[in-house]
Length: 294
Image 1 (tube, helix red, strand yellow):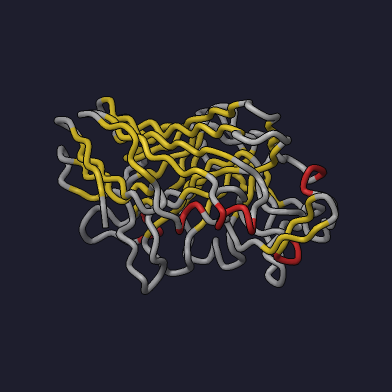
Image 2 (cartoon, helix red, strand yellow):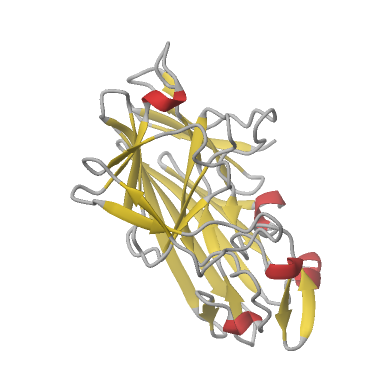
């Protein structure tokens, strides 16, 4: 599998052409791998890019101009080979363009460029979506990086905690319907924090991901047993955020999203989907988030 590595004194970062997927962040100073290494016992991915949809459509399809288009969870970009179009000592850019195969399941012309850029202990992940067609296109896009939790010897998952922006007392979230995989939007839950932190619990993902809407999370971190963050994700201006792990697995995904899965029962046109991104012909959508290693 083709990969590209960028590095500096602090970090070595590897990105695969397949899915333009971040597959390693090695912290040289502390001698530890921070990205989940895709052990299929729990989950065989590292940090997939979710495009042209985040999560699932209700019923497993979306409707565009009255026609139904079947589409799997998280879209096709994560399982597609990207083309490397630019690279240097501190960055690499991969591109996916629409083609006959993609247009059968997603009837829009597009160009998706993903750049990973390293500066010190900060890795920027930059998305650029261009509508290369002659009609308005609709999409959601998200990140899904999984970070190792048990990074210190002789520690347990529940010794670690999630940390949020200082002063945050609580967050509200919705859960997914186990049958359809879509959001139960009419019932919210509260994540009560202590000193802006929440101790990890092995059962906290028994009902799948926690989904946070309304731009509540712009910074989230994983913290060591002593409370100090060792890796954080900064996603300013992102409307949605997911936190997930496979129950029993020693990783946690911090997921910045622009849009998310359907609400349970939604059967409207794609253009009517809550939180959908729309791009007119020739328009460009750009968004980025940062992964910070401490």
